[in-house]
Amino acid sequence: MAERQATVAAVRVPELIALAERMADESGDILRRYFRRDLRFDDKPDSTPVTAADREVEKTLRRMIEAAYPDHGIVGEEFGAVREDAETVWVLDPIDGTGGFVTGKPLFGTLIGCVQKGLPVAGIIDHPALRERWVGGEGSPATFNGNRVRVRPCARISDAMLYATTPHMFVGADAYAFDALCDAVKRPQYGADCYAYGLLASGFVDLVVEASMKPCDYCALAPVVAAAGGIMTDWEGRPLGLNSDGRVIAAGDERIHARALKILAVGRDFGGLG
Image (cartoon, rainbow, N blue to C red; front, side, top):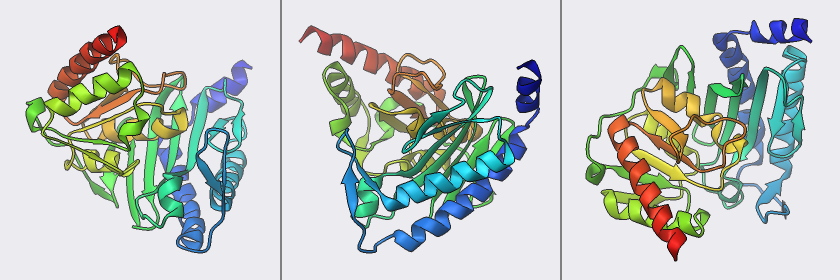
């Protein structure tokens, strides 16, 4: 067991990113073949759609990981987890935004993340219909289509541009908290899925706040945001990992991150009294 862990731990982040880039190339080729075709979909138990494209992409990515690093763990949106207790675990979402994908919206993306010792260390946000890709990792700069990007400063919450995929992802006390944050920012906007996090890394967006997320939804995003100079945590300000509760906040500036955390905390306390 100790020998296996030593082998896994020896893989450096640049090597992980290199494999992730090849995986994104493969997934992009597959998804462009399916996009805006007569594509049938099924509803999963949580009522979210899944397509043949989701399944083909994830199977392809899993095969590539198994071929390169058979000791690594894999957590995937469609086919569950193997070796989840490994020191290095890949976290895959073949199509983030399948609802947009099946309705022809090009903002869907493939998320490829890598977690070491429980914390995300490398990630790719790939948008095959747009041929746009953000990459980032621990000790590596964030890039957009090969060019370095960085978050922008935003000192005041009242100046912040906020994104969330949909307001319907917030329920109960979380809905009160999110409403309070919407009242505090300059403008809330919706519907970008993982694309919003790339925009934040490139300095066009200041905050992304979401709930009801799974590890495959956020583990690829956090390293990109961090590599661009931003910060991404849960709503308590804790680092994200495989066991986080699904509430995330990404910010380009630590000052509005801190302010947003306070607003969310007060909003949840108020909502909990209702």
